[in-house]
Each structure stands twice: as C-alpha cells, then as structure tokens.
Length: 351
Image 1 (cartoon, helix red, strand yellow):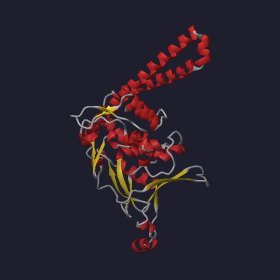
Image 2: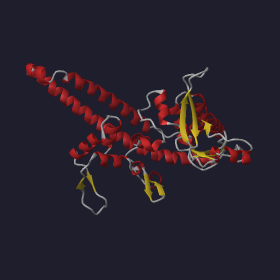
Image 3: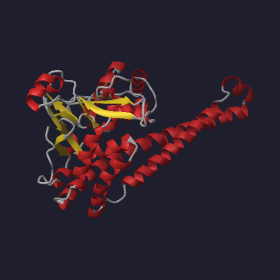
Image 4: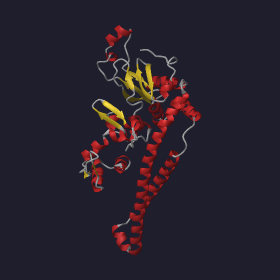
C-alpha cells in the first residue's frame, strides 16, 4: 500500500495503474481478526476510495464522532496528513483549479494557507481562501490573499442589517495580513507553563518521530529495492550489448542510458532518505531549544516569502481562529501551545 501511495504521489501513475500494481502484488486483507485473508480485486474506483479514506492517516470516523488514532493508540499511519490532502485534492479547500503541485509561487498559492482554520465570527461557517493577482501599481504581479465568507445568509452579505446593527457595512472577506498580525502577536506572548508545554511537546514529538521513522524506513527499503532492480537490469543489458551487439542495437538501443538515469535517481533518493533517517534518530530538543523554536515562529511568518513555510507555522500552532470585520476576535492554539497563552494579555479584537 505504501508503494501504491508513492506511485500515485511521486510516480505520476494513474489510479488504474495503481490498481493493476496492487492486483499483481496479490493485495489482500481481512475485515476481522478471525477471518481468513482474501485477495482483493482492485479497480481505479477502489483505489480512489482507498486513498480517500482518512483512516489511513489516523482519523477514524463513526457517524458524527471523530477520533485521532495517532493520539489514542500506538497507531502507524500509512500516509501523512499532507499526503492525504495531495491525494484528495478536493478535501484541502474549495479551490476550483486543478492541483498541479507546489513548485512555484503561484502553484503554492493553489495549495492555500490556514486551510479550514478561519471561521466567520458572524455565522460560524468556515471561510474560503482566495487569492487575486494584482495587475497595477507598485505591487503589480503580487498576490492579494484573503478569506471570503460564502454563506449568503451571513450578515456580511446583508448591508441593511449590518448598518442597523453595527452602523456600517461589513466586509465579505478579511485580508490574510490581519490574521497574520494577530497570530504573530499571540505567539510573541506565549510565556506561561513553559515546562508543562515542553513536556507535552516532547511526548507528542516522540510519537510523531516514531511514525516518521517507520515511514522513512519503508520508503528507504523501497528505494533500495528499486535501486537494486535497476542495477540488475543495467547489468543485463550491458551483457547483451557486449555479447550480442547487433541484437542490442536492433531491439534495446538506449536501454543502458535509461537504466543509468534511473540508477542515478534512485541512488540520490536512497542517500536523501538515509540522511532523513539519521536526522530522525537525533536527540530530542532541550527546553531551551523548545523556547527558541517558539521564538522563531513570529520571525518566520513576518520574514518569509515562502507561503508553504509560513503555512507550516500556522499548521503547527493554530487550531482555528474567528475572523470578524478586519479583525480576529478569538484564536485557539494547538496543544501544547494553548497551555502557554496568557488569556489576560489576549485582546479580543471585537467585531
């Protein structure tokens, strides 16, 4: 299954090709522990359903109840949350454009920022990320990032009612810069319960590292196996070229170069994964390093030009926030950072 994930995410394979691979690999399973294993007949639709099941990244849903298996059990996820989002483009947000990756600034914007974390303070609905390219002025070519309330029943869309209640019209959207300012201010004032927060952070980090190590080990094992396979194919065609040059030239010209390219690619992948595994086996951070990490978050979101780097901070620390009329009324942080908030210092922002 991990190989199937990598084929879809990094190998550019279709769901149909993944299904053919799983069938050739005699993919099977069982629903209950007492049942016998049986082979599954995979189709492209089955693969889509498999990748769309959040269970494989540790989310278990029964009715309206949702459980995070990574926190409650010694659960080993098949995929990471980011991989789940990439596999299921429609669940990341409400973008209309096809997901094409994150290799450039405009493509990274398609991925979004603070996804599913901005809640309208007037109607309690999630606000949709949107970006508009600026065509004129000194900022021409840059992007205007904001969050828009799509709930037409919200008072944001009823100017008459808004004027009666608040004395002015309400903006349908809120600029990212207002959210960033409030998040940055909040992070600069994380000063309470540092030791308790650090201990919780280490506990969670230890579990996350264990998961990451196992995933990296699996990837490394697959990469090493593929490297070995490509070397064997290269040696096979090399012998054919030496022993039967006419046959090689007629049917296999270019195969040596093809397999050499794949060997180089897989060798680089193996070395990269080996370094990642070494990094994952390094010691856990000290309390001082934990504090330094927290202090780095505000600096990062104010200085970086990389939207993915900025969003990485938000995903780490922000649970959700409530957006009012160009302000933030409430911000909730993920554990353990929520332990460090001094509520007496947090301004409400108002509506």
